[in-house]
Length: 416
Picture 1: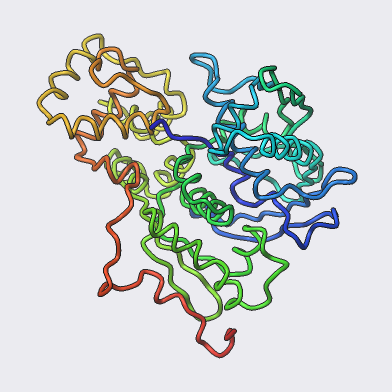
Picture 2 (picture 1 turned 45 degrees about the vertical axis):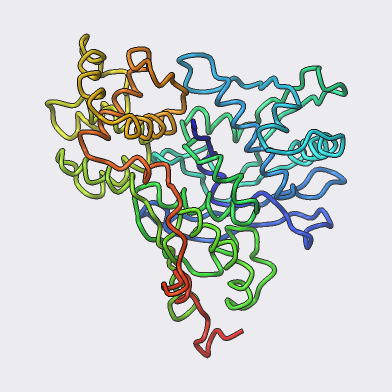
């Protein structure tokens, strides 16, 4: 298990149209929400290419699959992928878990046509997870600048990333995402809800409140529902899927059409606590957890011995500034070996997931120093690796409270 990746800014809205958008007309998404503790406005117009419709939910998954390939194919030591991704069509099919059929290869071609033709006009600034801004709003941008899809499967295909993707790479605005979970949800709507919730709570929040209209807009459902009860009847099964997979512990409804999602944000909350123990204020700790990969924060905390909170933040911003001691690997073995084999397996699985690498279980000395640092941090902080990789909770018994039971629309102002 090595995890996956998501474009942080794009997680805040769906680029997929619906059957109602089949005429190929532009679609504007405009809403406000709290993102990692700060108010954020999303305002973007999606315009399909000439003679095309907006991308479908399946196309959005194709884009994410291409992102997985790009991030996993980076040269050793490179933070960002190349501007051109060269791949074989079979790789995308495999990444998506599709069957190897002519029909699915045709789906890929149609997806690339729609993704390549899509133009995004930004009316409000996109903000990276660390607070830096993308290019000023008021201009059009694209996901892809060009592509070639081979006619023969064994030949190479390629895409050239567009400005919006290249900016995300430059701003390090590509965050970790549980790709296996996204595929397991088996529903584009549940997947988009998962991506949105994962993004807005990057700072370690364990709950997220939003107006139902804003949520409908973010999920690409804004034009289809005029009452919260109708909206919730559509969304509820997808929220239930997130409960089953351990993302949510429940959802509450508050009078007036407000939804409160309760998340199992185990690791971000633990990282905020660890940073605050090092002297960071609560607000700064929240911004650091939202702005940087958990593995980077854990590795820096693991190796941090002396210095001010400001110096710790600088080290997290420039992780190459901290060099492990020469005896770090040998010392790790002394800490590692006494643990039972089953515990070591769980710790390694979590470390590989967070660091995005695969390691041989029996060769700790050959692991990247970051993997050992993350594993050591989990051990010394007594963290639960199963919670980190978000193992689904035990099934709800017939006598247990339904975690979504309080999410109803019975008040007279919003009755369906």
